[in-house]
Length: 122
Image (cartoon, rainbow, N blue to C red; front, side, top):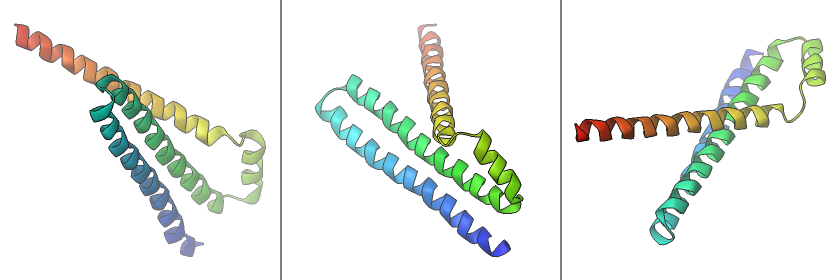
């Protein structure tokens, strides 16, 4: 089984880089829209792009981890996992995680803006 480790690592890295690449393309497109359409719409589209890119990356990472773990477990555990966990568990978990990360980043940036504003006003 050790000969599968480079394959598993390469697959996880490929999916993560694919998510980053798609996110980068969407980010460039949103930057173009910001220049043409408006700042508010551009920010909303950028948030959507970040959530989508982060979700794709997390899905790839979780699937690669589950794929790697399934080789070390006996077949009964894998079968039991497939009976208990629904097929859409990984995408749902990834979407929830991504939304929480983006919300945390947004709240942190708003908090920093208020701190900067209060320090400038004295």
